[in-house]
Length: 284
Ligand code: KIV
View 1 (cartoon, rainbow, N blue to C red):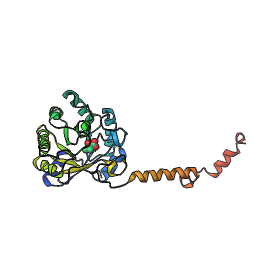
View 2 (view 1 turned 90 degrees about the vertical axis):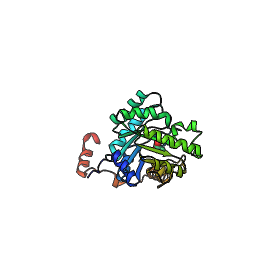
View 3 (view 1 turned 60 degrees about the vertical axis):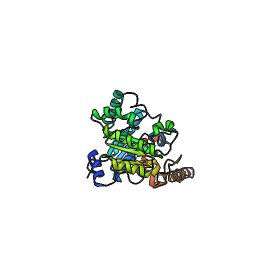
View 4 (view 1 turned 90 degrees about the horizontal axis):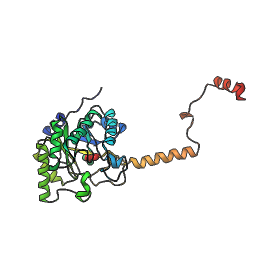
């Protein structure tokens, strides 16, 4: 039996009841199926796609078309998880009408339930406009990878009292602008805990300690598939990269040694049919 569709209200109720929200990224059909079968509340089709799947050096080059293509694949694999499409760099920053149109494409063309955008105060007009169009929007503050250049790299945010206060104000601004949830990335645990305590809407932490209302990890980090670098906050639950290498090496050795395919992985023709074919005058 298919599990019931998770709604934003169900996620918000989890905050009220103190039950942690589970979220993971996924970028394709098998990833979505695995997340769905594990019973994740929510799947984020993150623009981390650019780095862990497409091999870019950052999330900046990711395009709308790339995001929509992968969102559609995730949608086909996940019927019940709450699906969030990440708006790529420059799809919402330049003007509000463009932000609304691009946000709408995630729902109309890719079956997402919500969109996520990065940034604090400066993103309030875009967030409001998208929300006014009837689209559920998720915020993202702290380390915002699309602007990591401006932030001076992938660095811990909110280290000082002034920075912590700025993060709290940004979170409150986004909540007032209609954010349905907010991702808190790479900030001290006590800062994230205090922001989570003060907000009505759920916070989803990544590198933000245990006291957020939910947690998200990048699938390829937790499975150990992406090994170019692993952020300290990303716990590895498997080392699939090594396992993939081992399997591919074994396959290559079997082909070179003529051990693959064996009879178990081959098909046979009936002896009589074989004899009849061989007996044809043109086969002699
Ligand atoms: O793109 C992404 O995967 C994200 C998560 C790190 C929250 O935004």
